[in-house]
Image (cartoon, rainbow over all chains, first blue to last red; front, side):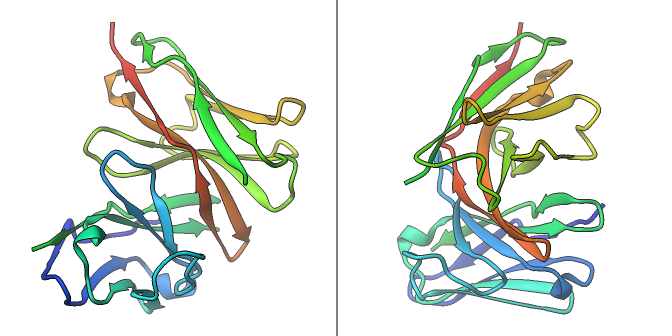
Length: 108
Length: 122
């Protein structure tokens, strides 16, 4: 079945740019979605269809997807961005939802 | 504003069946726009998709769980349900229900329930 690979952790200083990757076989041919999950809370959608932002999500959050890697970029990182981030696709080959293993964003 | 709420026993004994219901409020489960899913998250671990159901009853299952899982929709009650059989401690997790929307090119979770911790223990 389809596998999505994320780095376990990404450290970033406040005000800098964080990039969280999501690797998968020819992932550029799929639509990738990203979720933010703070401790003890349900996930929240931050990017859908590779690069679209739901209402209420700051413009600091952006996404891209090409080749074998999708990327969530968070600009001007704030302390409140510290959370776990998950990528997700729909695998139409097997009719399955697939999540990446998650990345913990640590604001230094 | 549509909302999702999970309900069911918080403690299940090993080898028994875990049963959860997700009640949809503020909208109809019979909308052709949405799929209705269960996702779980073991303590300290990542998200795992379990199963999905469409309002007409079509179902999709995780390959790793499909032998033990049944998902069903009840349009008269505006809810959907999950049964996970022969549970072990490895099934201890926060169980979420989610509303998934999109098309065949891609679909995402636009709404989540708050989640409920289900513990498997004797």
